Length: 111
Image 1 (cartoon, helix red, strand yellow):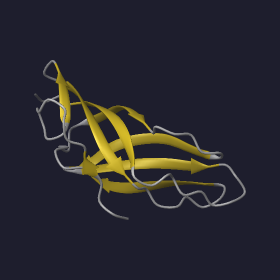
Image 2 (cartoon, helix red, strand yellow; image 1 turned 135 degrees about the vertical axis):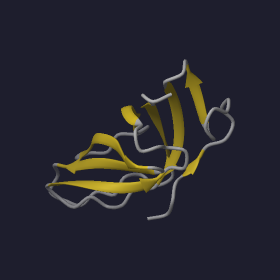
Image 3 (tube, one colour; image 1 turned 120 degrees about the horizontal axis):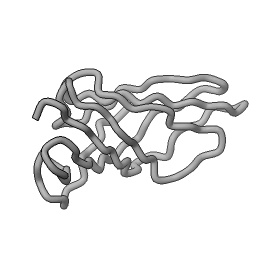
């Protein structure tokens, strides 16, 4: 899976982020997740520069809907590493739309 790129143009706190207070910030990240096989739940690892190990994903928004595909969870597993959990409740494999900008709301507790 190709690495995502952080979209430029937002006020800079961490590259490609917009900061609210000292603890919350948005990241707009271009992603192309891998295929999710039928009737399964799968976690995918995405490199997102600027995340730190103690960050928490409050919200993640996939900009389009796809039949049978659910973005169930997002978490930071290590520095610069985002884990996304996709579920596919359909009878065919589904590939999340390529090159979409996902909007993340991150909480950073140790600021």
